[in-house]
Length: 68
Image (cartoon, rainbow, N blue to C red; front, side, top):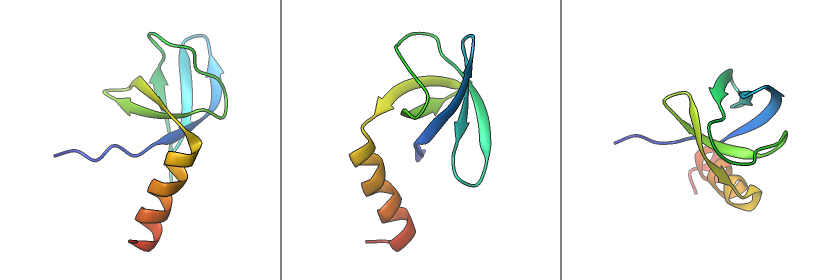
């Protein structure tokens, strides 16, 4: 089972986004969809597959941080 951690887009050049995961930054390809800087996304296989609402991300981050 895989756990997908949301990351925040901090830079976009052409079809490549730089995603900030807090402890590291990684690149991911934008294949389809409308993504912009500050969007939270899920990446699989170095491809952005889904935009995630910020409220949902904050809930996940609190869960990971506090275990509650």
